[in-house]
Length: 221
Ligand code: ADP
Ligand code: NI
Image 1: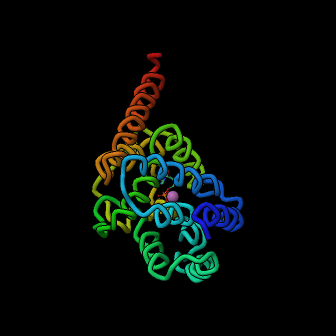
Image 2: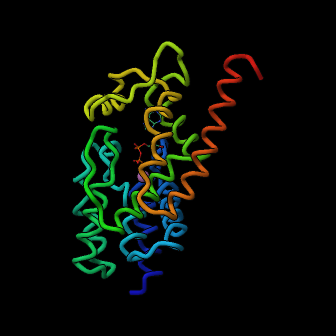
């Protein structure tokens, strides 16, 4: 089967699996990650099949969506076998997806293959720029957190466990803090030069947004 056809079939599979998720892990998020990867691959050599399929599949079985990341792994593996992806590539795709997630600044990240690095960059780019801002407020709404509260300061010192508390509402935070705790740090965690270039532009856009936000907040504009 040609790569083009594999990609079309994978898009259909992902569309069915992700369905109606509303905080930035829907089908269109996967499609955007795929598009980001295509941009990155213009200047970065890597196995296209591994990268593009991993991008499309990366959020299937996400623990925040289904409770257990591993629950869907068997299904994804069978799907890939059915579209003639080799055993070696399936293993690589599975490994990438498993090690993609960000668990807070103190958590040590596993060193990924170049393909994994491109997928990770493509996913991280989604947290930046106009898309990143939109996703942050959508997620903030899901967690029931305020947009901004000057009494709650951002923290950079929390552990993986503390970071995950925001998903359960145990740790009260604000969406504006999320920019300082995570989003503004992402540009320095990008692996590949071609993704870095895109990240810097999206970073600048977020800084611009925050500057305007605080000027409005303080009644200056
Ligand atoms: P990923 O797409 O890498 O799986 P996450 O699941 O961690 O990212 O988060 C999904 C989106 O929600 C991202 O854009 C992220 O910035 C945003 N997000 C995560 N935690 C918060 C939070 N506490 N407040 C606002 N936005 C958040
Ligand atoms: Ni993602």
